Amino acid sequence: MIEGNIKGGINLPWPMVHFAISENLSINDPSPNFLLGSIAPDAIHMRGKVSREEKGVTHLVHNDKLPAKELIMEKCKEYLLKQAGPEWKDFVIGYFSHIYTDLRWTDTVYFDFEKNYKGEKNDIRKTYNLEVSQVEFDLLRSMESTEKLFTKLLKAKGYTINPYITQLEVNQYRDSKVRWLQDLKNEPHIAPIYFKAEIIKIFISETSRELKELFKDQSIDYFEGGRNIS
Image 1 (cartoon, helix red, strand yellow):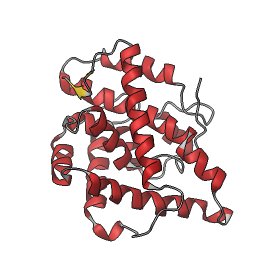
Image 2 (image 1 turned 90 degrees about the horizontal axis):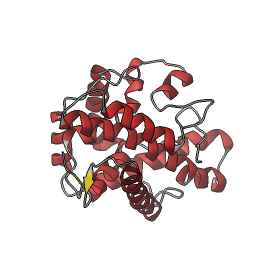
Image 3 (image 1 turned 45 degrees about the vertical axis):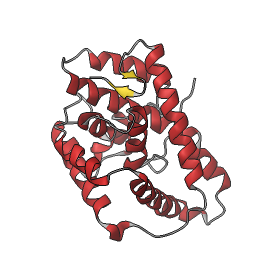
């Protein structure tokens, strides 16, 4: 059973990693609400100053640990039954895929970063933010069409996932992330030392494969040959 330690959000992946996994799972054609759902748990940031515990609630964190994959799938199935319709299904699958992705990132990519970090202890957050900022723009450039990505995100209506996040928070968070990614001044223009392109590529590929297997094992018929079919 895997349970990743979470440290105030410092160790979690940023939106483009989630979007890249969504693209992988859907053969480069994820639906708007699947994309939006894939970043929805982080919409908690729209509440301003919230406690570490409040931030953890949207990710099913308990005792500073992300949930085991079994609980993630259990909750996913629970929420799939709360509404009908393909857009809701897309959003929910995206939401819980996000939590699993965070779990795997914490236990693999971030674990290795923390183990191999050579800088000053007080600079670890700064180093992380700088390098993953570069990862965001590197991944953005690797996509077939950034405009298609942004158009889909802005088209998605989003949903409330009670008691975790509201539709308004989700849409506000989406808008803020799209603006950030569209502002080229946010790119640090560095060569990452710890979060190299090959590491990120392997993580995205392996996590996508694991998610497909998880959904299949749980009899959640969502992906067919890698494409979301709703």
